[in-house]
Length: 194
Image: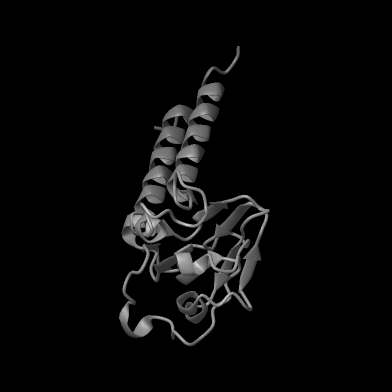
């Protein structure tokens, strides 16, 4: 006689596994400028990148996608000083393939501009700042724990997704705990021990 509980049990365990994965992986790709590609802002919308970054909440693991014609433009990551003065020399990172992806793997301030002379002065630049798990552009620093502005930061751009903080908040632990309890109860019900 065949055991009809085994397929249902496997299905429910797979469903529980998918619920655990969903509660942990919530990273997004953001196309810089949304419908506009990476380029010199138009006179009708000269602050497109400043406005764009203020309407998005970024977190570790998220990515920025810069789309542009590679024969006409590029993207560089620069320091705060280079961003303010539009200095294109000695960038932290240089991307010029027309389909450039930048992954957030550390907290802090990130400054981007076009690598083409004259474009930065025409507001083709982007500042993203976050010092906690979630962030937005131009947010104020968070007091004494914020990084020293003069200290250079060279984040790992295409590294692995960072490990969660060691002291995660109860709201982050609850979905995993609840999924584990539900899984245990379902397993016990279908294995005949309850």
